[in-house]
Amino acid sequence: MHAVIMAGGKGVRLRPYTSTLPKPLVPIGDRYSILEIVLRQLASQGFGSVTLAIGHLGHLIRSYVGDGERWGLKVGYTDEESPLGTVGPLLGMRELPEDFLVMNGDILTDLSFAGLLEAHRSDGARLTVATYRREVKIDFGVLTAADGRITEFTEKPVFDYRVSMGVYGLSREVLDRYPPGLPLGFDELVLDLLAEGCNPVDHAFDGYWLDIGRPDDYDRANAEFSTLQPALLGGTG
Image (cartoon, rainbow, N blue to C red; front, side):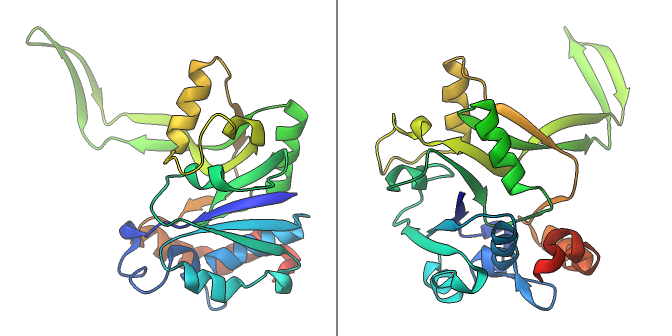
């Protein structure tokens, strides 16, 4: 099994932590970086190879990860000379397997990556998206108006959404239509597939998931890590 980890972003929302470190290398707990946790998880689940898509401060990621041997992985790299979006870096990659995992390099989750990829293969899907239920609370009374009159009122409503976790199963053929070097976001890929009537598969998940995008998220990850370490790393730590 092969995984591609997107690790090229600047981590602007996580500053000042990312002023001198790329976001995947910010430390979690006393021992690990986010990226090391992810690599350990992939290795323990049977992945043999990983491609790291790097950009901002990518030389630090290369220095830290090396060839991946210490985790039992074969790690290669692709460099973004300019931002290519969530999917764009994949377009220039050679020799990708028919089906592979794609994930962001800044998430903590106990999702089974191998289970998602196996489900993707079994479904014969072109794109499988790991999704998570997220509640959005509105701390105000919400009004609906028409022709100058209030027609509906809801006090502090709560909305439920399924959001993308930043982990996908992808089939190589999906990328064939796009030229290498094209900036391409995950949102554009999904909209293109929907326009074709090729609906991506929803891989619903209700375990632990945290997207470390802001300082509050990072502080939460560190506060929770000692409790979560057995679920995240099992016997790999």
